[in-house]
Length: 179
Ligand SMILES: [Zn+2]
Ligand SMILES: [Zn+2]
Image (cartoon, rainbow, N blue to C red; front, side):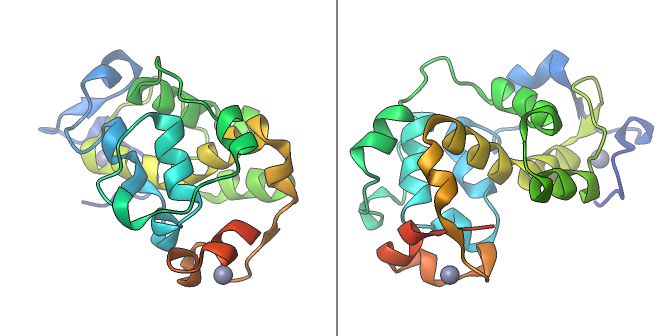
């Protein structure tokens, strides 16, 4: 099902979610599955993926194939927060427009389908997943740069998150940001 924008409240017969029931999200929306909501090859980035798993405090099912470790300084700044929950992430995704602080990211949020959404807005399952897909990478970027400002000095690979090299080439994955 695809909605342009997010007029989910008008859809009868579907379970709907907002901040009132984010503690009971669909089974495929858990901390353990958040890695899969990064776009395209970014979800297999050999630097970002283990670092994000570390931050979320989850064991990555693909872990053994992703050996590249982030620098200790970055890793310790992004220490696992034991109180992290999917509900907290969803809240943060709603708050992103007030958190991002560069023109590129502000423009991205203005142009994406969920511009103007609040935590009160009811979303059906497919739209909730689209929402996470649209914003989770940016949440991660903000968390990472907030904790480890030197991460912001990395140049973007011009292929962005569609770059396949990031999945296989640790040096490239580490040297380049994705957007
Ligand atoms: Zn919907
Ligand atoms: Zn690249």
